[in-house]
Amino acid sequence: IKMLIKYLDNQNSLSTLIFVTNKPLDERKKVVKYFRKNCHVIINDDLNEENLYNKVMQIFQKNGYNISKFGINYIIFNAMLHWLLSTN
Image 1 (cartoon, rainbow, N blue to C red):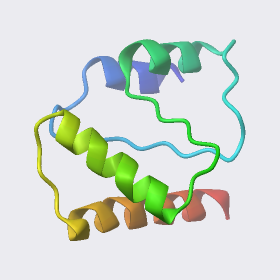
Image 2 (image 1 turned 60 degrees about the vertical axis):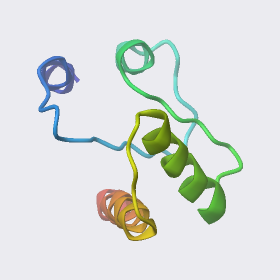
Image 3 (image 1 turned 180 degrees about the vertical axis):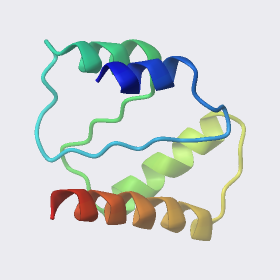
């Protein structure tokens, strides 16, 4: 956790980290408090493919960026792939 927070304090502005969990966040944990204060946290209990696509699109638009459907699908696919690999 210390190394992760150290990285996040000095992260590359061109990189994006996506963390996915299938359990509720433990709000008492230091890392969760850090994420809440310093990162963009999305919690969506009724997450499905359409909601996820729309959420990613909104984040990009809110920050003044345009992204193609291909780009969104690429982000979602890679986040899910990493999650699957980490849980097996």
